[in-house]
Image (cartoon, rainbow, N blue to C red; front, side, top):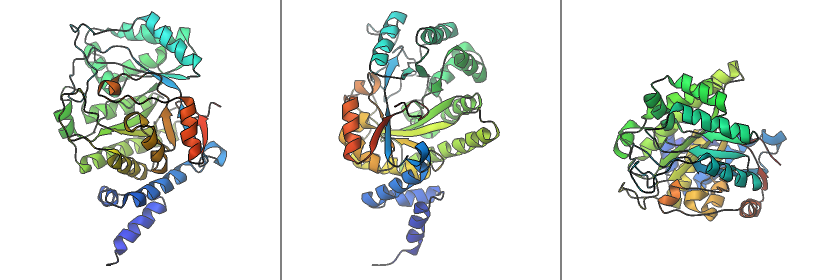
Length: 373
């Protein structure tokens, strides 16, 4: 067997916690799966070593929230989406405040601390409708965090309201918006985006929303939906763009502690059923490799969340040994991925069992990864 000194040096570099390049990421991806997982787990330990009073490596977190899709009307017609409807469809809807209140009350009764609120790009809803929605929630349920409106929605708002992003985000924050989900990132490579969602925000738009939100003091998550028409190099470019933005946000935060940044990275695989996108989907093996690579590459992200929603509880559990330190949410309600054929469910008891079976302590957290209990 020929000894590969360059590979040995790269493996040591990763083990020691140093930043890797795109070319190095490409080489790491093709390691034996167990070896890549071990390196990602090492990087998880380095990232969480100081968390929770030094107990971060003994704890796996989860949260309790509910996905509330305030409308399914959308005019960007993404090929990978089975959820959207047009205004004339018989099952098109815009949520009523009474229905919204009922969903939040159920969430609170189950110990939830947050709602994840996203919707289609509805061409007919005014800015005041959104501000009234946020104000209503904060007045009725001041204890709930509103984790809402993905970057692509904000780009849509900019076009419909004809106002700057900064103005819109600031007004939404003042009305009650607490944080922003990373949805709509898909792959941050415009060549890919133009194939799967040509009418949606492009890569620079998505990043501009996150940069503006962080500057205004909001925190957000970062995501990647892969396993469709992208290449491995595209996935790495996506990670590079996230890492660059996090560097920028953390530099700003060092100068002004009121600024925000990315809280976590979450990746999941494209789910093909009932969608118009014809692409070869990928399975658990590729999912674990990509999550592990994300943990290693995103050296400025403290948290990585596993995706049991698309992979199922067992793979979600295994992902906790491939760089993830969080099992996500029990997902009281999920409407988008389930429309594409994926219908896994989880309870708090299930979460605790999966986490304890690996020897970790399960702890509920909020959106900012502060422990709730």
